[in-house]
Structures are given as structure tokens and as C-alpha cells.
Image 1 (cartoon, rainbow, N blue to C red):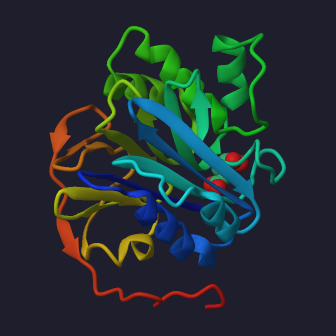
Image 2 (cartoon, rainbow, N blue to C red):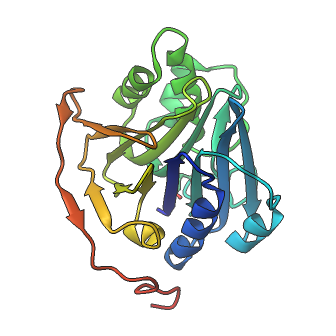
Image 3 (cartoon, rainbow, N blue to C red):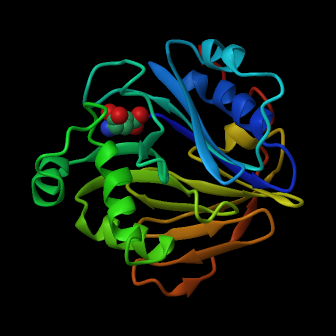
Length: 245
Ligand code: GLU
């Protein structure tokens, strides 16, 4: 299980994602990727190998106010660019996922029997099922309905191009936290990814879902009831973890 970092802001978040991925490297990984919403369209960038290969390949002028990023440790499908996250469905939905979707083949046979997927991962099913449910539901409900189908462990962050100010996140059995900033809010699987930007964290619990915009964080329990989770101040400092540590 590897790393997630995401941010929604009134300013450019590309360097926040790139730096966050570097701070997640110590966990080990085989590939990495970023998805952004720019001009109401989803763009994605993925590389096998070191995070620096990905970050150095990005255009220096790349700019977006919202994005999700991932370091992958393959559980289903070989390490490769195709299997790296984010996974995209119909250019509408992008997801990053830590964990394992145990019943992904059952879901594929139920909803997408004859569809050829772009990757060999268990995770890609999440993008397609969320996209499927958005045909008749708004995005939060689509994520909720998707997760009701899923057995396994997950921390996820989701972008929907029709909701270009919002990241939808959820966790079950895989860590995920929200970092609170000024006109910027963050998501990560590990506080170390965000320590340059904030020391205020809200740790999600199993079953929680949340919506994160630049201005606002809303958290819900597994029954979609709005809930509060305590904000904790972290004493972590930069590089208190290292790749060799
Ligand atoms: N099971 C997913 C995959 O193989 C996610 C692995 C991870 O947590 O990085 O792509």
C-alpha cells in the first residue's frame, strides 16, 4: 500500500503534489502519477520508476487549482505506466487508490462484462463504477454507491470534471487524512507529505467520506450523516522520515 497526496486551492497546486510525492517516496513504490483539472478537463501524467522521472517530465508552466497524486506499490498487475494511478473513466472521473478491491472481478462482470479496461489493476473498477453512477447521481452519491459495492481496503481520492472545485475522498482500512490550510485544503495518506504546508490535520476513520474544496471540508460517516472529527496539531518536522529510515 502506498501513497496519496491531493490538494484544492485558489492558487496553483502542481508543486504541492510534486513535493508531496517526494515526501512519500520513503514508503517504497514502483510508479507514480498525477491528475489535474484544468479548464474543466482532466489531464493526467504517469511514469514507471522514480518520482523524479514524473516531476521532471512535467511542463514547468503546468498550472491547476485542484489535483490528486499517487505512488503505487503494485498488488494487482505489474509495475508499469498503464497500471500506475490515476485511473480515468471516459475523461470524466479520475481516481487514486491505496489498498485492495477484493471483489473487483465480480463488479466488472456485473457492470462492465465486455469492456476492455486500460490497466490490469483492481483499482480501475472504481473510476468506471463512479462514472457509471454519475449518469444519474451527483458525484458524492456516486462515490457512496460505488463504495457500497466494494469489498476490501481503500483510501481513495476522486476528481470529477463536472465538479472542478471538489475532491471526494474516503477510507476503509487504509489511512487517509485531511490537512487544513489557508484558502487551500489538502489530502494525504501520510502527514509527512504535507508537513511543508500545514500542521493541522483531521484523521478520517474507517467508513468516512469527505468533500474537500479550497475553502471547506465536509466529513460524513458511512450512513452519509454529516460528522465532526477532531483537528489535531502535528509535531512532525520535515524529513523526520527518510527513505532509509
Ligand atoms: N491495488 C492497487 C494496485 O495494484 C493499489 C496499490 C497501492 O496501494 O499502491 O494498483
